[in-house]
Image 1 (tube, helix red, strand yellow):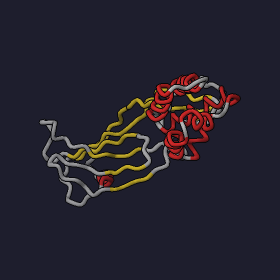
Image 2 (tube, one colour):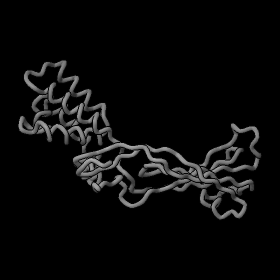
Image 3 (cartoon, one colour):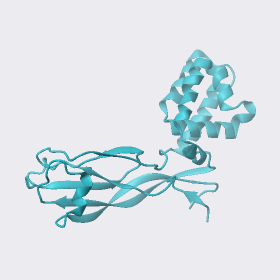
Image 4 (cartoon, rainbow, N blue to C red):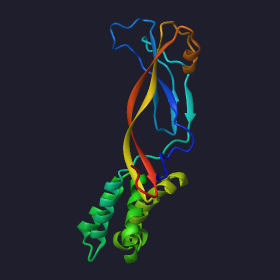
Length: 216
């Protein structure tokens, strides 16, 4: 069985985000809804909103989470495209096409494009050298500095031999309280309410797995 990881450094995290129910005419004036979703964010703000638009106190949380999604097949296609644009005489139009292509993808996708380029074509010059040679130092710098946004953790995963995408179903909680909440409440205080009712629901999420061999 190949060893794979989903990119999470510590845990799968769940957070709550207050959602007003003012679009639901059947909802009580005192109804307060709080949703819990698994989400891949490094920083977010938590609060609750009642039907009258009153906000609870804000809580800011920073988490170490999974790396941004990449489409590995697309990254390899882009690497091939860039090689063909760089190969031989590069006209001004081809230079601009290569530059635009590399600037339009995310930093994580760019890192993976570089990985594929060097894996297939490094004998003709690595990605950094060819970009500087074909596009010039200024444009190459604008492209390459975007790689600095990729964390060391994610850069390690993005060097994996195989990256696959799959959809997984994950649980979340929908909780409701019928009580009026005083000003200044914090979002997690609803969890201490003895009258709160919750039900588990499912949400589909796309994620990457990383490994040195293809997973099943």
